[in-house]
Image (cartoon, rainbow, N blue to C red; front, side, top):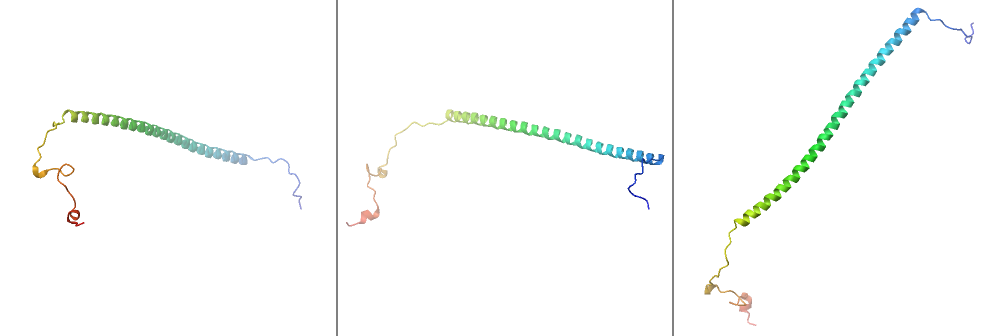
Length: 127
């Protein structure tokens, strides 16, 4: 029986083994190159997505600024319109001077200057 712990020395590879290892290393390099290309494409896509999201955020902020400016302008125009409508209404208002109205004797004002008005219960009470 041979001793399994005895050193065997340097092992020389054959040309076929070296060719196999070289081909395996080349295949692994090609595989890793494909992985790197795929990751590069992913990074480029994410960069484009980030740029698009930033542009959308800028668009939203610009839209918000435009909306607030439009609302402020609408408020100012509405105030001007109300002022112009009030001025127009005042300019075209119909005013009637106060006049004396003759009072029919049958329609005399009630007390204290005219006819006594009381409830029926007060008028019929005996007490």
